Image (cartoon, rainbow, N blue to C red):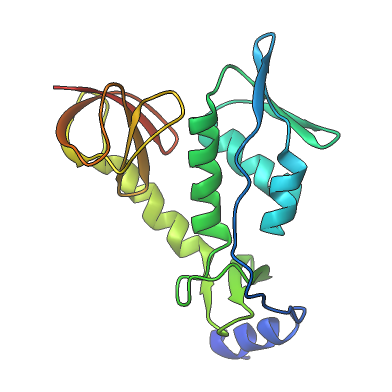
Length: 202
């Protein structure tokens, strides 16, 4: 019986060839609006196209991380509940980090394939490959590092469109009202939704 490495190499050889590009990889900013009790991601098909990923796969990820139900309608994605553009952009970026960007050369020239039910990210630029499953397991464990009600020290890396400070903590994106870029703060976590956390200054 072929060992794992042999089978993996066979699977990689069967992946389609893909040309790499020197163009700057830019993920489109989410264009959202509220419609009743739902949030519409109007340029969903454009985003999935730039990422070169199956729209159903992207949609499944977003609904899971946002903790809601949703559906695709034309080129739009419709989610139950109200979500901000910052929330949507943060989750899309988390998807890019996990399912698009090569961890070796940091390029987006990758494809997803399966090897014995394990999802493999293969890079056409440098030839690197990694099981996505391992990164998912790591991310799942990281959930325990941030808890509602807990206090943490973070550094504000950016300010969102609504004026909230944005910080990173492991795989989490934290929103802190009234925080300025460059500040180091002690914050208290009020709510966690997927890999998004909402906090207040202590």
